[in-house]
Image (cartoon, one colour):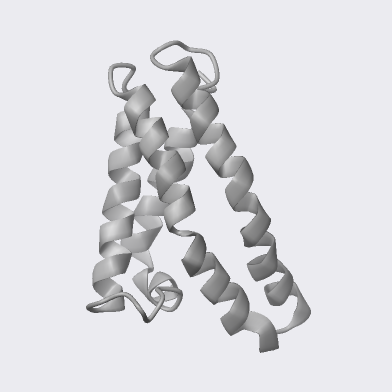
Length: 122
């Protein structure tokens, strides 16, 4: 349930404070950054709901692993854009990059546990 909570919190943040997410949407994506912010926030909320339900936990966790890979370019963009910021902000932006791997592995472990309680924090 911890992974579901993380995704739900991140998804809600996309709607509560979209501007910060708009700024990291790669410009190579078509359309408005705000659209991508809302789409990714809705995806995180849907993934959180899917992981919270034992019947859909496995497939939702696998989708979350793919999602974490898919948003990596946004984290790269943030690290690049923040290269001239003060050291703590630069460090935070750079620190996000290696965090994607543990998130992918965590989601995969939740998927392996499937509908059982193991690996879900429940």
